[in-house]
Length: 326
Image (cartoon, rainbow, N blue to C red; front, top):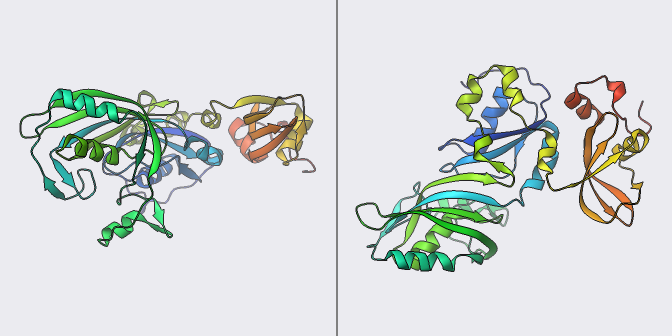
């Protein structure tokens, strides 16, 4: 398969693909391959995984790209292996080893150190990251041998489970499961744990097993996707509204649905709500997101009538139109 050289006829595709990203590909490379396999016109993702990392990568297609930002705030769960006694330039196995120290910690010390990293913590973002400073990604500075000042970020480690421990031998390691808030750098966490143990560490493996409501058991690999007939590939897409699992549902009748799609506020007896998923009644279809303040339903991100028609695969006349649209 060569996505860059093979011309395909694009088509409208709407939904979310839960991809099990392979090691070695960037998130964008994985996205482009999936987009090519689905022949999708428009695609995006909900946050990146390092090339070293594998696991759950939700990919958004068509109308789902309008709600991809909603998922950035989701908690994440990772399983990772820390190679103790070695520090690298990138804090993972892709970097060059810059320091080697003996591993002399005990199992009791490991448990005590891990306890210190539970709850709210501060992290200084790694230089090898896509975070920007003065409009330039940190990894660009790092590749030029520069180190720039970074502000510490506050994150939360909800759970930190020790899955396996090997403190002796040629390759001492810790295997951890980390349930954390958005913005947590697992490479930094691993490096900080290594420092606290007095021996240094870097990540030798990293897998995201869950992000928000999406679990690795629901994912598909690129190889499996490629082996499927085209219709089956599309059937692996989850509906657009899977990105809005905690939104309160409001359903509008046809006339109000058309006005809402035009961006017009609707009045009702709703309480104040920060996150609302708005549906049309006939046919039942997601119209977009909104919030409610002082009894007004205020539109956020909206689907177009054409997108709704494509998702439902119905006669255009059955889909609510924007007010005044013929």
